[in-house]
Image (cartoon, rainbow over all chains, first blue to last red):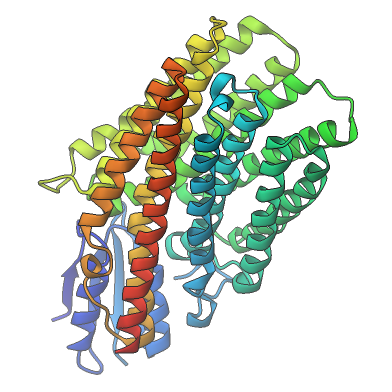
Length: 71
Length: 420
């Protein structure tokens, strides 16, 4: 089952730290969904650098969803 | 994903030094403003004394605009995903031009050596033009639907108009350009403080307040229409100022004040809904700032109908020192340690807790001195006592040295963590 990490309502850098901690335990070939209050542009840079694949969308209620795959 | 046609590569992220050079220079201008007040207390006799003009521009151009430019180099990529091309060299050029330009401007105005106003005009105008062009290039692919980047565009337009008007004033004083000085001056103040700084403050607040103060988001109608509405009313106000339509001008000034109070009250309301059990120092700084804005705007409106010299001076102190400086300092204490943390995470993979990079105690001490300086400035403006003005000058100098030292401490903690 895909892991869902809810990092809404936290003060920076806690959402970033939570995402990085979860990514560190994410096995190859598996993915996770990250829920945030806003677009995490600095996180995208780290994901690009470290070779993760990701997609994001903004839900109607304003929540940002990011699917991250460890290829 | 990232907006079409724009890559947000790791290498494109601004280096820590890009905004930091602005953040380290700005407090020195604030300290210079305080030192000027300490050395020449008679400058508070009127807002038109050469010394008062110099202190005002040390604070507005030297401190406020410098921090705002540095913050935009970093906030645009972090918050909006907008990458300013070649941000390192451009930041170096803009910083140099703005720093020397601000010094020339303050010296030219303060010593009535109007020969310095021409280089100030060229350097400040040129530096800001380069920044605005680079920022618009960075923002060109960012959807206008996003409130913060859209309103930052409006603020950039506001700053451009303010600087153009400032250049016209500089040319009027240095080269005898035939312009209605008081009309251009009023327009310059309106566009600089509201069209530029005020709109930028709001654009940053839409993100910074909910993010760092753990509040709900601002009401959608406010983020959607506030900056656009303020810009539109400012245009109408400018027409009444130019046409010297006194009654209409006062009505539109009152409308602008209502818009500003709506923003300030909305911010204070959100802070009351924060999920923090105890307000942190940034929240306190914002509360002081919003309260000062409201009081300052009341003084602006009273000054319209009173010839007493004190009202415009009180308005200036409340809006600039109580309002903008408080809020900017509050934001700096979140932005600088966050950037240190972010760059450590990107560079070495792990970073100490942000509280270790920027502990609360020195911030509390600094804000205590800042609030005391504000109180002393207000008392000094009312009493006109030279020793009280000197005390206020000393406190303003001390508060900006405190700010500089606290930023340097974060940098020291960053370097130590980077080396281990």
